[in-house]
Length: 147
Picture 1: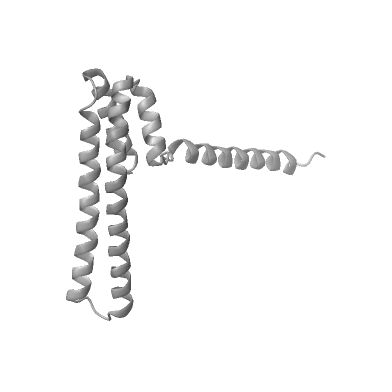
Picture 2: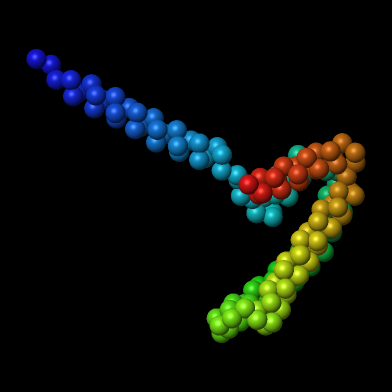
């Protein structure tokens, strides 16, 4: 008499393997890519096919922004440290906590405004066709990080 357990075990193994494989593939395909600032620009600039003059202008914009961004990120780090110190020492939500929290949000907002100004400064260097590519790329990237 043949055992009915063998085919059932094979079927269960195949189902489990297919499920695990499907989950792994789904996680890889649905997970938004994470780009560094440099990778973002390298990928974008290769798609834009910048002229030598445009590349020179972009390099100047990038150099200015790098200094400003570093300064704003350092301020944000410092504001977060102050908030952490206050949260560690305060037992209640009071004016000191509120002020430190406001400072973090203001500093973060300043960084975000600076970044958006930087994008528009870059955009101003582009021709109409490049602007369409740039706008789509920036919007797509923002949407990827909003999920």
